[in-house]
Image: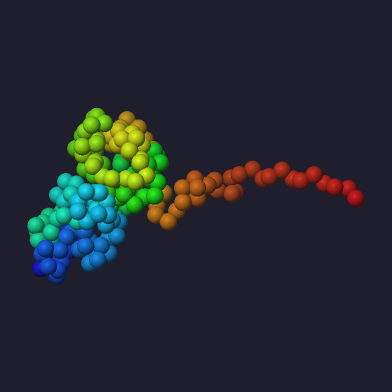
Length: 187
């Protein structure tokens, strides 16, 4: 049995120690935010934190991380208040969204350790592949996340899961002025 902590909860996996962390998280713990992309460690869709470092979970056997602390996208912040999550939402980084959890995890590990980054440093630390080509917005979001982390900028938290941004930004109907009355017709 392999034991480690996932998103703050101790977990004991009764799986072969050679099982990739990705499959333990997705199949045994039902943490499906960590995505399967290539299975070879090239795309980064499966990125999670192990002891604070961004790792490709498809390449890490659970037997190698006995006693470690694992954080998935679900555990980064329940209310989407992490600076990277706020910056990704504010910069409208996601398109199809498939690669985004892995990118957020890679960016979070980078932002948590740095107060200033060049494009080259961002590119080197976030090697994730995105078919939608969000890289310019990604780089700006990482820089924005650093400003948020350092208190130099504030953005509203992203809406909770299941609430669309339009619905979250909607004005309460009672506070809106009533619509003008239509003109009366005289017959």
